[in-house]
Structures are given as structure tokens and as C-alpha cells.
Image 1 (cartoon, helix red, strand yellow):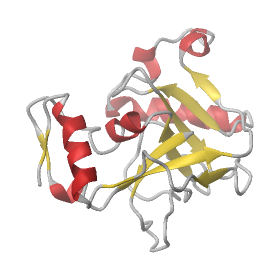
Image 2 (cartoon, rainbow, N blue to C red):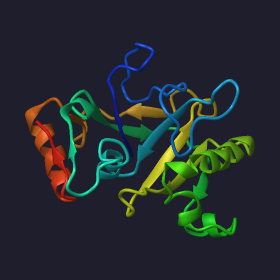
Image 3 (cartoon, rainbow, N blue to C red):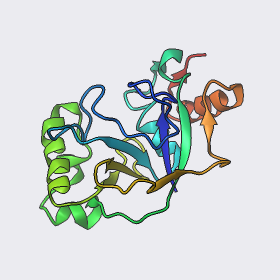
Image 4 (cartoon, helix red, strand yellow):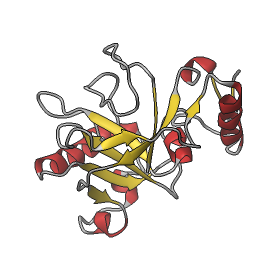
Length: 190
């Protein structure tokens, strides 16, 4: 099972059930964007908490707050993997195999993104469907960046109903988010 935090409508205006890949909208990220045309990507994690830490809480520091505009329209979706795919392992011995440590590739700030994107591009050139890495912000979980032009259509399916699905505009789901943020001394502004 994978988990993804996303907007229910993509930047192109299409409905997004959680399986829609980002075609290149927005700022650079740890492993995107590259290619010409741009390779579409989808970020997910192996736990719902990691998906939130990698998105809504990505830039939050202890003592800070996250304004309502940055979380209220988002949803947390559970995705079932229904077709196998291969990813580069940018964790454990996968990093060491390249003579790297997390501080070189996956535990960096945004100034390193041009270098980290080059590694994702190399994985794509090798024919892989994405990269797997330890979440920088929730480092007991794995995060993934999947390449949309390498996954077969239907490889991911929304798992509905799923107990971890959240709609942050709903009071009970906003409370869950606030409790998760409070654990790292961040306030979710109502």
C-alpha cells in the first residue's frame, strides 16, 4: 500500500483521484523534473504519516505554523499497487553501492536538487520506474518518486474505502493532521 497527499484537482484542471502524475507543474523537487518532454512524476510513501511529512509538513520547523491555505484543500489517498515495477533503491546498501550516504542524496536541502534530480534521471535512463528512498522528514518510512511514462496504466489503484484516507477539509481529518503536526511542535492553523 502506498499513500499520497495531493490536491483533488490537478493543475491542468483534471480530476485527481491520487493516480494522476504531475506533468511538470510547480517548482523543482528532490527527484523532478527532468527530460524533454518532462517525465511526469508521482510522489508517495509507505505510511500515511510519511506522506504528510513529505508534503504538508515538508517545510515546517518546530515552533512554526502551517496556514490553512496550504492544507485544507488536500486529501490523503491510499493507493494499492496492482502491477509490479522496479525502482532504484536510494537507501541502505543501494546508496552504499554508489559510494553515497543519505547526506549526499536523500537527506539534503533544496540547494542539492539539481544533483539529486540527475540521479533520478539516471534511474530513468536505466529503464527503472522510479526511485525509493528513506523519507527525509519521517525517516522510519520509505518514500517513492514514480515515473509516469514507465508505469503501465492501472499500476496504481485507489483503495476505497480505506481507513487511512483523509479529506483535510473535514473536521475529524483536520484534527488528525493537527495531532500529527503537534508531535513535531508545529501548529496547523484552522
